[in-house]
Image (cartoon, rainbow, N blue to C red; front, side):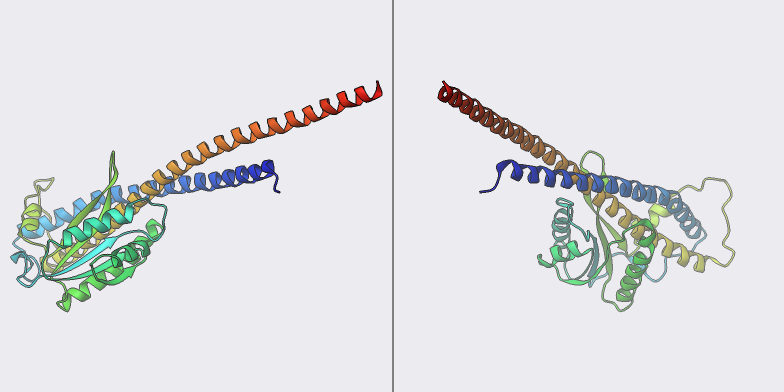
Length: 296
């Protein structure tokens, strides 16, 4: 028969070790949140610069490339990119976004081509009615976002040039104060009249407009590529910030549960230990009394 005290000691040791792991994951998640939030913040000024450059091109009479201003095509072929996670311990992070994505895409008629970012999101979408075209890995740092976004950009452009998609959406969780994150969708392509007007109405910060040295058309093409790249990069960074915020919240809940478990185990251990000591003292006293009676 195993010793109850020894069994409790093992449980306390295991819970203490687990608490140490949870605290380490908390620190790591908090550190990741900071770097991804800084990445999103640093994009704001650059994004504004790109928009102002586009405004100058439009103001000088340049039009959007191809016929993208005409709005929605008649034969819609929807492409969608869904940012999820590769790792667990993120609560409902993937489930919430997958349900949101499925609900939104069901409102659109026509064919749908879906790409997932993250193994967890891939498996979650495979359980839905949506069919997947492929999966991209989740970046593990700010420095690895750019190569993966480059792969995504090339894949989407290839499908678009082949006529496999006419609209392209990106779905991701976006940080929001008070609720950790919320599902968000952005229609990235085509660049329609509404987007054109919003950019054209921007105000240039000085009375003097710049000029494009190499011509407006090459400049416009470059700025549109930058606009698309920034949109994808920001969506990825916001998703990663949301993922780590969700993981931090999960670790905080786990730490609280472990603390309560340790308190309960320690209380039980001390009570059982005291009971064992009392029994041993009772045996000693009883033996002493019996010995005293025998001698008398």
